Image 1 (tube, rainbow, N blue to C red):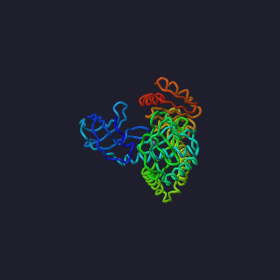
Image 2 (cartoon, rainbow, N blue to C red):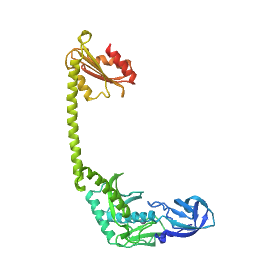
Image 3 (spheres, helix red, strand yellow):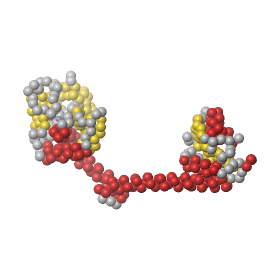
Image 4 (cartoon, protein in one colour):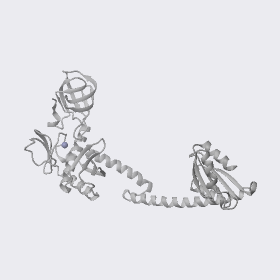
Length: 384
Ligand SMILES: [Zn+2]
């Protein structure tokens, strides 16, 4: 099986190894490449001229390096780890041990699972929900433990004799125990920094409820700085619109939303009043047809509240009928003055004959049709 160099030294970035299985799925006699496991993603880097695309912990073969060009069995290759990526993973992963321990110590919550993502990491905690003040308390505590620069040590202990693990291990035989001095002992095969100060800082973002657990998002070290930079830029861009200080911006946004709602209400009211005026004007401008009835056909973009206000206003005076048609969605509206044949009764058979549906009352009725051509035929039928 492959000798795992990262177990002994997570800071090792260059090594030489012999190719035990060649091709594009390479197994070495020893490797510093970390394979995806325990919530931590694999390393990337190079093996000689080949780029390492993926690293898998294979039960039968050992650690398998997927590479972009074949390597020859028996040859010696120089391996190099992408250190930026690895160190980022070490910061997030050690930060997870620390944060899990802090949540456990402060509130008794166990960590059910851990995921280290490309931009954020999450832990699922054994509580239905964490309060904002609990989150902030844990964040403060985690950062004070980072500032204390507690040593992080790796030791091998027998599963039967091991004591003080935060979470019992179901493995047998020898366990790799990672200890944060005075804070946490966990069985773990991942890569960690050698003292908590190297985590840099820890910042908790949002909390979601997921299947009865509280999922907490967090970022550590370089990620926390990059995230804070992006957050600052976003907030500063919003603040510039108000020529205001960053801290005042949320209240200004809330005020603006309230104002927009009020404006929309006023606009709607005015639009309905305008539609009513237009209805009266249209009535005045339409000459009565045979039988003294004023009939107009409106082609509308939508059969909405404004159109209905227009139709009601047009037919509020005696002897008037209004037909409105909309192409998309295909639909018709029919409104009549008091004393005319009831709108609903008149429209219903027209809709039935054209495969449409809808209805209404004596003064106003509305229906949908299968397509625009059917809507036009409904207009013709209502005009006869
Ligand atoms: Zn770990």
